Image (cartoon, helix red, strand yellow):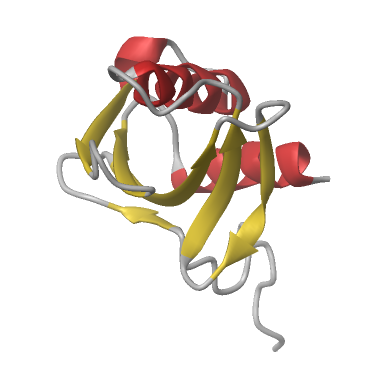
Length: 110
């Protein structure tokens, strides 16, 4: 018998299942970009360009809004849990599955 091959994506290292049915998303953010978009994934992080400037939390707020939009979730489902003043950030996500999240992220990359 052959192995089942309907897994979401082989070896996606930027997102994983966390505690209490949440997901943990590791991102690298480039603030002040011309447009907000997913650039790709490398080195265990999803790279995002965010149009908002890195001042007074504007970029963090725009990041949460954009990730919620990409994942088709409400903003309250996304929490910034690490990296408030860093380009490397960690988000906690509720209200979706790992496979759905990977699918939506892949659609945003394409």
